[in-house]
Length: 462
Image 1 (spheres, rainbow, N blue to C red):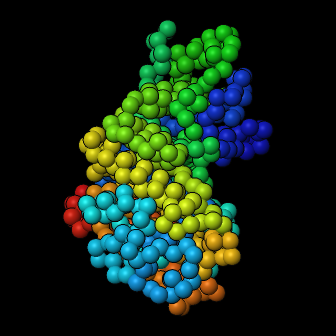
Image 2 (image 1 turned 90 degrees about the horizontal axis):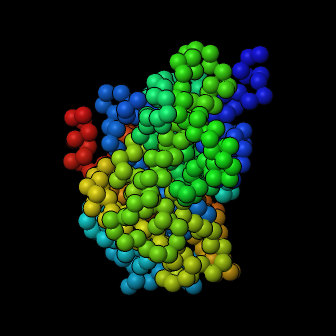
Image 3 (image 1 turned 45 degrees about the vertical axis):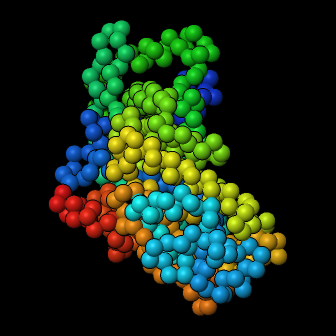
């Protein structure tokens, strides 16, 4: 029977979620529910000339719709204070930015201000897309797919499919398997980390490709095959599986059955699990904030980078920014979220600098939409449209990009966007990741100049 018609085909396996869980109690459940579709690299992630294997992108998603107007504060606009009498940020409290006329940062973003003053922070103002959608789910899907119809594969997934050529060979997405290990010896590590890792319960749509799927886990301890701890027979069988290696007949080009596919991906999962758990078991080089999950997520990312994983993209999440009530101004719920955000990213770059890896890592922060200009009756803000994005790292164009959207010329009470978010994606893909943005975004967008001039010149010499 053709693979497409089998009850459990390789294609369907790859399309399913790739989340490693520890709840598996049987081998079939482990193979079905765990992140077995990790792919093996042959030494490195790519052999494409000019593609920088050492460049890393970290994505920080601000879930719930971050209030951009209280994040990048337009203190020079009287309309701002008129629209928000109870939750606005006073001019005296706003952190002034060099080159930013009439705008500054929320006082909770002192960490961002420090990075900005050291040339390591870019504020991209008025980011959005045409005909904005105010649904959390729909708008997030638009950002994840880079498509205003909110359909298709993830934009980072398409990047993995196109650029990580050590992966994605053939329909299964797996390159040749290693030679079998010697009898009684464990399988030799053949992977240096999957191309995409997301910290969380589920892998984001943005990282879902057709051939390559990301690895997703909440904690390193959960990222393992734990049924072996429950049953001796299962442990012995699993150890035997991993000692066997993959016979020549299971290579993708020959007898590519579902059983062989699952065997290859099970071995990949074991290798990657061991690598990742060993990496995050180390101690960070700096002290991270104790409050919030973002600091924990970024500390794990820093540890994996320090361990030398060849992962290209890491994805973390921070929320919830859906501040319909009791948002607060300089103090309150929104301020707490921003404090955690700024302190975590500042600690992350301090850690990377101690490692000597800060120049390798660009971080991008975004939210699915901003909030409405006027505050509501509950001292909060409702779903809006355009909002700022942030880029971090010593390679970014420091300062402010773009003009703040008008507070007079509104779209039914919402800001009109100035910069299409896909031009930011294009700038990152072309400038930092050295990838074909037109092929990945499936449309032509003029890349925003996100790299500093010195880094743009260096990129041209590659």
